[in-house]
Amino acid sequence: MHENFKLSEILKLVTPTIFMMVFLSLYTMVDGAFVAKFVNTNALSAINIAFPYINFLLGISIMLSSGGCALVMKKLGEGKTDEAKKDFTLIIIFAFVLSIFISILSFIFIDTLLKILHAEGNLYTYAKDYLFCIIIFAMPTILKSIVEQFLIAINKPITALILTLSGGILNIALDYIFIVPFGLGIKGAAIATGFGYAIPAIIGLCFFIKKSNMLHFKLPSKDFKVILNSCYNGSSEMVTQLSSGIVTFLFNVAMLKYVGEDGVASITIVLYIQFLVTAVFLGYSMGIAPKISFFYGNKDENMTKGIIYFSLKFIAIVSIIIYIAIFIFSPILVSFFAEKNTNVFNITISGLKIFSFSFLIVGFNIFTSAMFTAFSNGKISAIISFLKTLIFESGFIIFLPFILDITGIWLAVPIAELFAILVCFYFFRKYKPIYKY
Image (cartoon, rainbow, N blue to C red; front, side, top):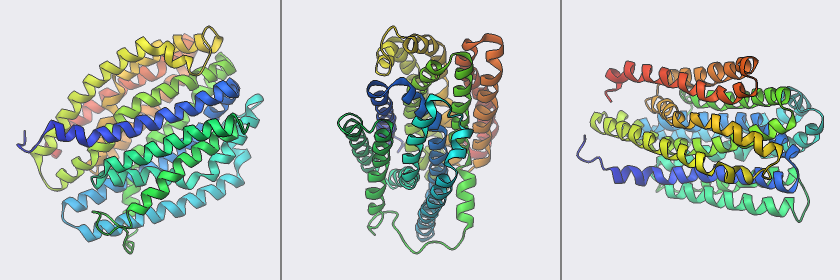
């Protein structure tokens, strides 16, 4: 192992991004808890109906942030500083323009979107109110993750964490204000979420005006291959988010068919908990990926190898701790969203006992995908994400209920993660001689 490699430095690097992602998931959960407690569980179900659209926005954001950051940091590692700054500026401008275009189209086709998402009956009005407000904030939703990822890349993870914390605290405060005293219901939750994204995005952009930063705004690059390469390199993250939206949609359809609206509320709660768990591993991967890119670009094989093997050990330990914690504290977690001994509560508890097996595996799959993105190998990263979500998860959600009824719905993700880790192991071994980790 490289003599300059220190575990304390790695932990110092990734801790802010882990807290950042965990806090982001926590205030998303608080959003749902406020809606469930002060509106009703149908409104909570409606949020999940609309969530694939949010997955789409986050997919655009994470694609540009992960793919673009890997390319920019690789150029910095190669000493191409001026080129890296111009590429960074172009990525930000492209994200800004694209978000406006997406917002306009979304407003025009909002009813079509709701039909595609199966917003029907009691859930339609709630879903439309929520989606309309989310579309208003599409731009900051896309820009927030990009800004934070580049702040992490230029060694400002604490700044990124503070921005996330401030946005989250604002979101939670506005949730209460808009939903309870103002009585805005599900609209209030969407507006609060929008401001929670907008404030960090705006303040974060201001940091890149300072020329003393490793990255700052310059006249943008005229090479639009930068955008194509960023999208290609970050395509796995885009696939992951889009697939997550598709999987959420399939879960909703399956639950409506086999359980009804209470089933949609139950899967919404479980997916919130899953979001919290995966946030830990996403946060770790976000924090470590720029360093993998940098050392790979700098041809420092010992540092690259040391970071990757430390990461695998870290993920193994944390996965076991999380699984045990969820198993013990699941009744407390679920009670934030549903009253004890209600139908929604009982369905959720029984389902979570099965679903939580996926938490032992998911971290390895997330890190492996992020690792290949860091090596600028978007193709392999995309294959992993595509197989895991669009093939394995979607396939099992569709077919397992025919055999095992509702148990099949809960088993879909654990079995998909198991198949995905076999794919990750195959690629990990295949490319080990190439990237020398």
